[in-house]
Image (cartoon, rainbow, N blue to C red):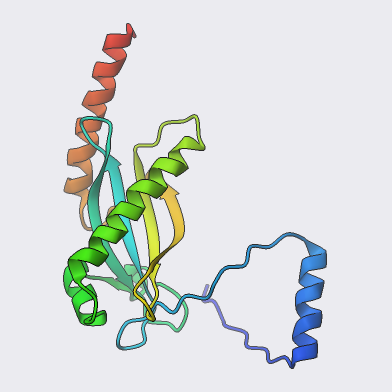
Length: 180
């Protein structure tokens, strides 16, 4: 089923009424609009796939851009979207930004966010996919969403499996030490 975009134009008074009616109906989250587009004006996000390692710490399985072809959606690969290499993608689309600094910023932010997110739950997490938008204006990364436990591994199954096997061994040793 294809999504169809509906475009509606409002003058200032109509927009004020529309927003007022939405607020009366319930609670909403409003966020800053982030322009996250390639040089060809395609939408993109950055997926950071984290898995626990053999020491029970978060490690990076893969970081890659996901590029869509519709105006406002990141499209899955089987529907025409595609993925790329993070370094080349950032160099091409953000030539005025030091690529390694931006990648390290994304990594640091990913670890901080997942550690905080994990504290919200009693259940242990072993795997997470964090999706970031990169603002075209200042190359700042913004979290879009966090997907946990099986966020998808189409092109890098080995990297995920290698870490998760080590994490499984770590958990088994922890349980053995605890007497389980």
